[in-house]
Length: 62
Image 1 (cartoon, rainbow, N blue to C red):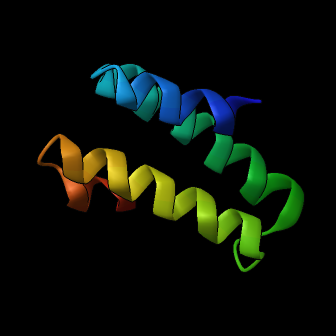
Image 2 (spheres, rainbow, N blue to C red):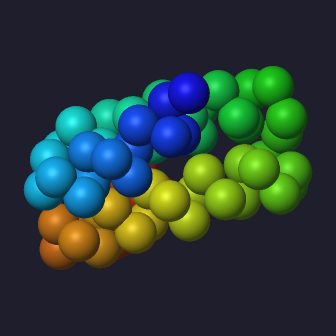
């Protein structure tokens, strides 16, 4: 799944690609599960982590 590919890319230092995967995962989770679902919240956390690795953690809200 997209969410499983994100950590692999991040561990390889491919942060921009990981960010794209996490954003796609978050978008899908929000549409299907809603913003308050635990899986959606985990998607936000995953995206936040990779953004922080890139020094742009506030971008999760954009």
